[in-house]
Every structure is written in structure tokens, then in C-alpha cells.
Length: 161
Length: 180
Image 1 (cartoon, rainbow over the protein chains, first blue to last red):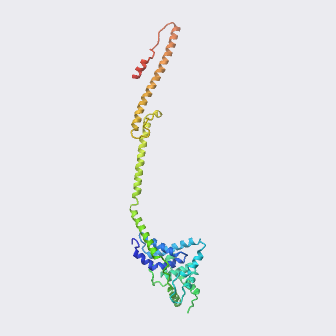
Image 2: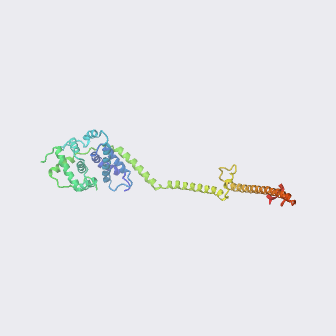
Image 3: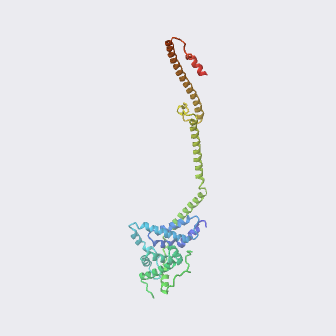
């Protein structure tokens, strides 16, 4: 594939845009800029990557980590992160989980657990794909997911029935 | 790889409670209005255009450097040839290079300088030769005159006037010597 054309790019934006923004938000503020930059860079790739979706996840992860390092020097980092907490999810549709509470509980988890949960639950990546992206083993990805789910249950106050 | 919505890899065995929690969490939808889609597509179009232009220029990326390099090389070669030919005249003109005068009115004129300098050198050499000859003849004449005076004195002292050994140098003999 020589390049990612407008049609494919539109489909990728529609399918992955919101998911990638949520993923980038786990690393710090400004996830929209990180994701936008990744899509723009993808459009300029010559030749296009073999797997544009995988390329996007890698680019977003690297960009988000880089942006987080830059923003960590700013004094307003914590304030910005707190004010954006409400915006992670759309309003819940009556499944019993409050979007804001879920965002808050998720944000309280360590980054590696949070990242695994977001990639698995809201980006539908397999554990092998998660392990490859996070540069770890599949078993570690499994373990982090289980641990994250357990801690999230506790924070949300969801009881085992 | 990275095909979303794939359910083949469910991971480790999870309890029904965990599956229920997963389903409730997954039901939360990431906000979809956070990306400025129009701006993103506009910037992506710009990036694609830049990439295409760069790719097109990449085919002829050596044309401009080759042209500039060739021009600079030709100019350098011309300068080297010009300097070498200009410097070769005094080097081959003899050991007395300091005596080669610069022809008036030819300074800075490259064309014809070599011929003019060679011609001037020949003229100058002839003049130098004539001057040397003149000096030598003067020295010889003055020396002979001194010898004559000394000889006459000796002769007078000895009582016999035999006359000078050679005829004294006159202006006519100078001209004859120069012509000869």
C-alpha cells in the first residue's frame, strides 16, 4: 500500500478516534492533540504501514508518553487532569455504572493496570496485541488485566454476587 | 493484527461476576466528540500533499547538486589553468625574474599578457646585455689606459718609448663593439 487515502483515513478516524483519545488520556493531558498528530503523520507515511491500526496505537502511545513527560514540568498538570476527568466517557446509558465514577476509579489505578484495562475493554485488543504494544509478555498482560479488574471492582463498590 | 472487536482472545478464565463487570464497563462509550474531525482531515490532507511533493522531489534529488558541483568544478579548473599559465612565464624566463617589468597598461588584463611579458623580457634582456657589455668595455678601456700610463712611465723610466700595447678605446670602437 503506497499511502493511506482519505477513505481509509476517514474509516480509521471513525472507528478508532474516540478509543485512541481515551487510551492517550491515560498518560496525561492533551490526548486530542496526540491522536490528531498520529493521524496526520499516518497520512504522510510513504509507504503506508502494513497495519495502519497497529501503527496508530504505537504512535499514540509514544506521543502520549512524550507529551506526558513534557507536561510533567508544568505546574498545572494536576489541575488539568482533574478538570478533564468527567470527559472520559459519554453519559452512561442506564447500565448501572456512572461514567464519572468509572472515570475516577479508573484514574486511581496504576498506569500499567489502567492502560491494560483501557486497551482490553474499550479498544478490544487481544492480550497478545496488548503485550506487543506494551512491550511485555502475554502472561503479564493477563495478570495486569485481572489485577486491574479486581481493583476497579473494589473502587466502584461492585459486589460479587 | 489489531483488528478491533475481535473476541477470539478472551484471556484467562474469568468468573461470571468478572464477565458481568467487564460487560458493564465495556458498555461505557468513550466520548466521540473530542476530535475535531474536519481539522484533522484538513491537516492530514496537507501532510499527504507534503509527502507527495517530497517523494516527487526525491527522484531528482541529485540533479541540483550535480549541476552545482559541475559548475563549481569547471570554474575551479579554469582558475587553476589560468593561474598556472600566468605563473609559468616568470618561472621559465630565467633566473633573473626580478628584472622582468610589468608592461604598463596590461595589469589585470589576462588575455595577451603572456605574449607581452615574453616580448618585454626579450627586450629587457637585450638591454641588460648591452649595458653589461658597455660596462665591461669601459672597465677594460680604463684598465688599459692605466696600464698604458704605467707602461709609459716605465718606458720613460727605462729610457725607451715603445708606446701602448693596444690602441685606446674610442667612441667609434664602442659602437663597433655593440654592433659586433
